[in-house]
Amino acid sequence: MSRSPRSIAAAFAALTLLSACGGSDYGLMNIRSEDGTPDEFGILPTKPLETPESFASLPTPTPGGTNLVDPTPKSDAVAALGGNPSALAEGRGIASSDGGMVRYASRYGVTPDIRSVLAQEDAEFRKGKGPLLFERWVGKSVYFEAYRSQALDQTAELQRFRRAGVKTPSAPPELAQD
Image (cartoon, rainbow, N blue to C red):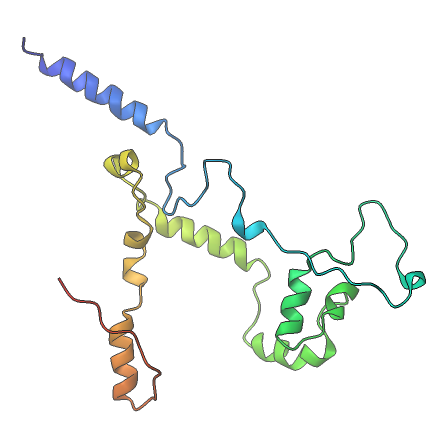
């Protein structure tokens, strides 16, 4: 039984249209979890319980308020980097001790909406670089292929720095070339 070219073309067109209805879940880098499991990076350990020197010094409990053993990742990071975590809680903006650094970093100007500007420029760059039909079917990520022209050749850079006399730390061995 032979099929007419029209019926084959119609079946292929229907299949193509059906695959286009899949939405945009297969973007450049599809890293969303579809199985409903918890995000392991969203789980923060609590601080250890301690007995206070005076129970009278404990703050009054407030519904929806913070607990002394609640995780404070931002404050902990500031403290680990040598900063003052209380500056975050006060909400006073940039500390006076950091004024010089902020002025130096912004000496060429600051774009206040840099995140939205970069998101728009990236969307324009990726336009037309999304996964093709077969790549959508198999769920292949095309992220690294889309940005290949902007990737840094780490081996070439290491050699360039070594030729320039820059002391470089030990580097992993080069991967075998196919």
